[in-house]
Length: 132
Image 1 (cartoon, helix red, strand yellow):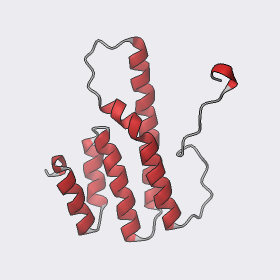
Image 2 (cartoon, helix red, strand yellow):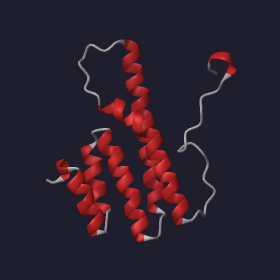
Image 3 (cartoon, helix red, strand yellow):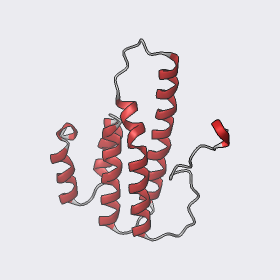
Image 4 (cartoon, helix red, strand yellow):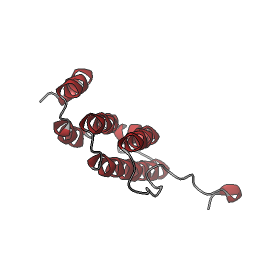
């Protein structure tokens, strides 16, 4: 419970998904998840100077958990998308989220899952750090 009786707002990745959903709805849900988690990813990516206060350490930990839950949920949904281009576009959103969190290992693994050469090249051109 929070101040003044307000509960924590529900995150898009915490909502129950009633399967089956279409590819367009799944791609839209992945997009919403990635956009909601982008702030958490930015906090995760900030360098730690080792002199963080306890509140900053707790915030970093909670935002890391939030980012990881969001990325995991988005990846699980992307696995169920049947249309190749829709899946590739959804994976691109997840790659961008991973890059925002400075999670290069996951981003490179997901980049290999993109089957469309055009989308893969577009991601690589926008993010040269993935060329390795």
